[in-house]
Amino acid sequence: MKKFYLILMSALIFSASMQAQTTDKDARMGWWRAARFGMFIHWGVYAQWGGVYHGHRQARGGAEWIMNRSKIPVREYQERAKSFNPVNYDPDAIVKMAKDAGMKYIIITSKHHDGFALFKSYASKWNVVDATKYGKDLLKPLADACRKYGMKLGFYYSQAQDWNNPGGSVARKEMREGWPNPDSAKIDAYTAAHKGHWDPLQETKTFDEYIDEVAVPQVKEILTNYGDIAVLWWDTPTNMTDAAALKFQEALKLQPGIITNDRLKRPNFPGDTKTPEQKYRPRQNWMGRIGKPV
Image 1: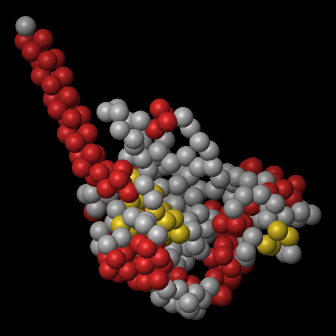
Image 2: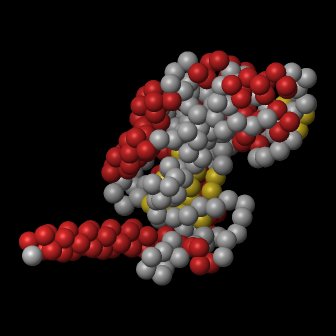
Image 3: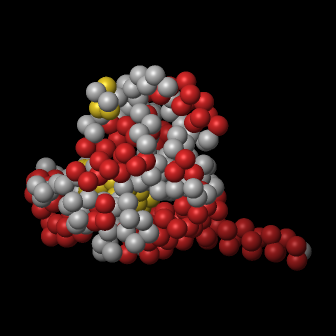
């Protein structure tokens, strides 16, 4: 009888915990489910290349992948940042345009796979303030404009892939996806032996060192310095571990109401929303446990 009582109590506690999690998620997801329309801003040093390297247009994929697909050396890529000088950047106009169009939120790539931070970071000098002529934080005026117009703000952050900060992981792509480099066979063999890395500078630290010294500190920076953040959009969990994902989950406590997607680390960290890309799935795959769109 005592054993049955303990099992029953455990079941009730688990049920109560799951109900609390569902209630908490519903509270956080209310605005998101109603919003339905927002803006995603994709921006970084890759804009300086315009999808062209050595006179060749990138053979495959979005231009933000040019460093990886064309195997641009780290120092060469970082040199191009010196010409990144968006003097006509007008976040007030951007947010007002989004507001007038009926959008309810804006998400910007605070750091994409090239590792370039659009904000002042004390974890890495590979950021817009320290590495460019522009020398100013791009996220702060956007956050200010979002508050002015009542727009929800979210940040995309590439937590695992980072092609410039040493130790970051790399999704391996073959040279044929970039440009017809005469040394392509040699480069492909090198990347196969080095977990996708093509430049020795990318391997001067371990993945764990990158997580602890750059990625987690930067996530804490973007969750601390810009007011209320509505969404944290993870991406491509290449080589991610559960241990690393737990460190990011801990950092999320800085913004208790934040919504996250399903790309932190699969399958153990599903987040709040599914984010398929360039594909469509039947509606039933988008339904949550309680019959509401996720």
